[in-house]
Image (tube, rainbow, N blue to C red; front, side):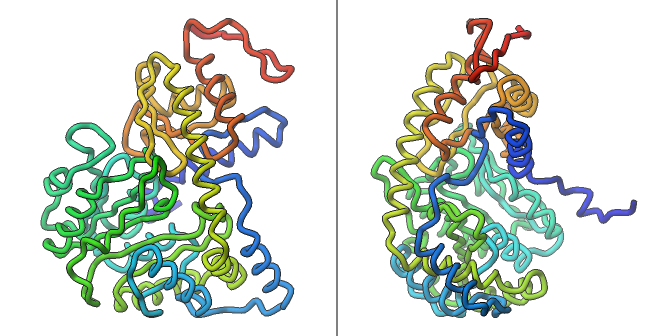
Length: 405
């Protein structure tokens, strides 16, 4: 079979593949614990459910403009005003089928072949392949001190004549690290000075802990005109537990949004009207669901960190936000893919290999499920990895026997 060069360079999403593997095992009746997932287990806001149901009941489920329905765009404008203190016109906003599509069409709108996109390591699994799909070159940048917190010097050193954009995801998937106010200020001003696009992937910006407050990139932008290359991407998937609704958005200069709408119009058209109605209702509704989720996640994080700290050989940095932690298991196994497969096979705990996020020896663990899953999942992992563990472990009525050293 003859495939394109781009097609041959792209691999499937590891997180989606692991979610599917967990589903298949569960359907077989296996007691799988999924610590690799990226979706909260709480229900979507009731306002979103009612709005979607009402639209379905009306029977008026039709095509819409490629950039989104006015009702959703108005809700996004209000959201951006409240949380970013920036007033946008409808022409500055495009709604897409999830923040993932928002990132994708933004890259398609700005990248030429062989142009480079820089992003800190660890990074979301899809950034490198998204850049490749546009014919660009991904440039992952590891902080010089090896931490999850980059400095502007780390980015500056990798910028060259082919650099077109920088992507910043803070709080970060997979580490949960929230970058400092100093770094956000520096990167905004640096990109303005160097005439680079800056894509702020803010999908987790309200899911932060320990009394921290979201950092607003617009506070540091000097260029507030329609020439600004600052792009902010967000959505309803994470903070409203609406992952399956697939509604995200982009705020950017009008010309870029117009081009993105042209691209999206040929790709998918506008997002589902039913789901846009739900997204608007979530944004306009009572916001207590977001705070309830945030508090639950903070508690789950604390439990996971306590359990991970019981491992002698595991090193973990306490996440500032999101629903992930990125733990160093290299003392047990340096090959994170091998380790992840071992944990699925031996104790049926799903994790995501760190290599997919640009750092070997790590595992991404999610605490967006229940406390019971966090506790039992980590206990199973400890039993599988700690050579001092007892020889047997019971999972329900099933007895597992250590047949490895």
